[in-house]
Amino acid sequence: MTTPRTRFSTKLPLALALMAILSACSPSKEERRSERQGREGKAGDRLKQLDKNGDGIVTAAEFPAGKERRFKRMDTNGDGQLSGAELERKKKRAR
Image (cartoon, rainbow, N blue to C red; front, side):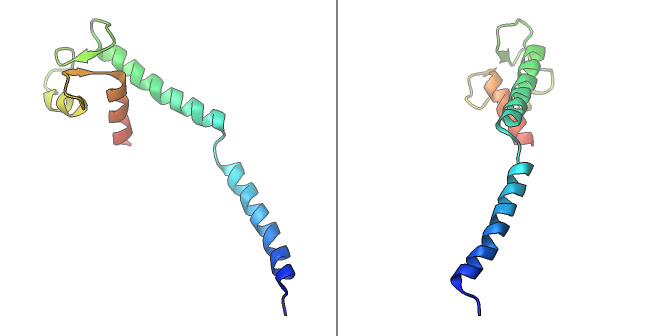
């Protein structure tokens, strides 16, 4: 017959071991921050590449020819310009 104390004493080490394994497998706060900065940097690089006049905004005229439908989909606020945030949102949806 098992007593409540016996059941608890066998489950506790298992729970602690599981917690240790899961914490070792999850990325650290620094790793997550570095990954996020890398994604934001890529969106910024793409913005610089498309932004012909260097004003920090991509207009329909600066967007590659023949991609008008894509531009309209990416321009989520409908202002006729793509900001870095809109480019980043597009990347997140693609994942």
